[in-house]
Image (tube, rainbow, N blue to C red; front, side, top):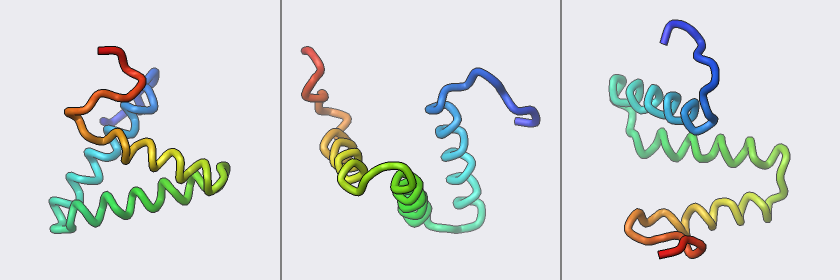
Length: 78
């Protein structure tokens, strides 16, 4: 991507950066799990700049409780 794209969603921006980080990790022989753990730590630190510990814990619990792709979210209709 040679030019900054406009009108991208936050999800699209995050996806592009994650893909680039994984690609760089793989190219340099860095462990992808370690990369993801590092990114998660950075994200938690960023959250804590503007959110309470309890709020961040709640956010992480929600993601953990709903990470099974074969399970519907509790609030979803069948």
